[in-house]
Length: 249
Image: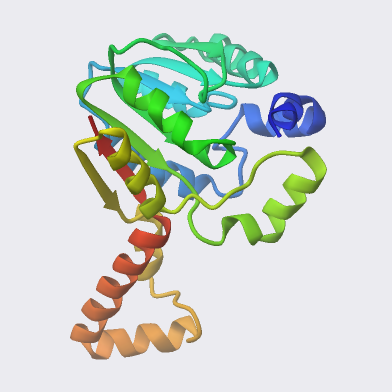
């Protein structure tokens, strides 16, 4: 599987690399990514701070954080992805971000980082416990690890199965309760779960399952308490099946 992750930039071809290089703006889920990176910034320590961005891919998350004022080290197992990240940094004259090739399951980055980020990357790990252990060891006392990953149902959707078959990569479920349990066993002193903000936006716009959106919106407008109950239930359900985990050392 790690061979597939390393070779992924070559396997996706020129158009795939161009798409990766200019994320999130090149991605159909651009809106979701922008909302989520906003919440990630809210959950990380305030600037100035040193952030370790694990599984940074083409570096767009690292660049966002650097532009906000963080000192960022982006790490990815694929040399081709690090090349894309460095190219984009040069093109956009980004300071505050640097990149290294590395396997986040087998690193010794030192213990002087204020924050560690896994954004859409931990679910590619062969051993998520090993990756979280490296994150724990990289943090200062009181440092924060933010884990923003796809949760339940990810590994069985058609896109994930196609990626596994075509590129020989890992596509695993990474539900918040699993991350929280591993984090606590490693020694993190706190492990909180937050709903994905984009899911909350969907709930507020009332595009629910099983009921036509217009009909559901009409009912929620007529019965304000029903709206409160629906939103609270949706937030609770999504929080534990597909939320963002914040681990504090």
